[in-house]
Image (cartoon, rainbow, N blue to C red; front, side, top):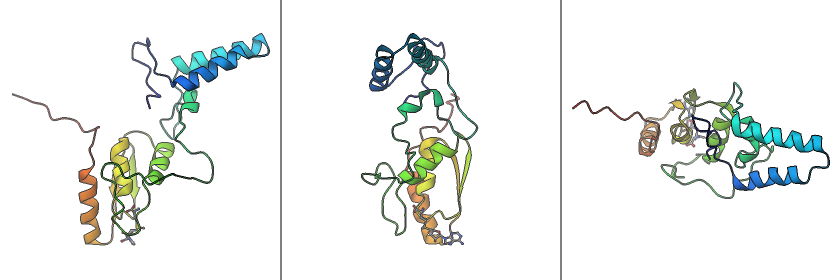
Amino acid sequence: MGLLNISSNGDTAKVNKDILLEELNQIVDAQTIERAKYYISRLKKSLTEIKTTKINDLNLNRWKEYQDILTESLWIFDKRDNSGAHNAGYWGNFIPQIPNQFLRRYTKHDEWVLDAFLGSGTTLIECKRLGRNGIGVELLPEVIEIANKNISAEYNKFAIKSLNRN
Ligand SMILES: C[S@@+](CC[C@H](N)C(=O)[O-])C[C@H]1O[C@@H](n2cnc3c(N)ncnc32)[C@H](O)[C@@H]1O
């Protein structure tokens, strides 16, 4: 989702249509002028300012749009994410949505993540997807091979393309 997607010249901002309509309805339905003004200034802020904290890259001025970030204590996922290099081949792997949630909530782009029990590499695949650097530790050499294969199979959209010097 393009939640941080305010263009560098400040002219355009990508917004979730349903959320924007919800905000506009709130303004229309406001009981007092003061309330309406508050909702308008909140909307203005969400379109012009990015507010992040030290622990992640989530834009708190657009928090309503992160509908896939789970904030309840019980996480329920419809089905396992089997996209890209993810596969449930290794006994004992966990579903990719678990590290995905943690990485987005508790790390920033380009930060380092250590998975001390790498297994088939689920966490490091998610790191690659989200632009985090990952280090994995694994006891069993045969499992390291599986992890290497899986992690290499994942496309890295953040990789710097080598410069053509010709
Ligand atoms: C539950 S699996 C991790 C699965 C992983 N999250 C995944 O999705 O594939 C735990 C892994 O930790 C490894 N392991 C166990 N003891 C370890 C140790 N002392 N040091 C490093 N790895 C260890 C096991 O070989 C196993 O592959």
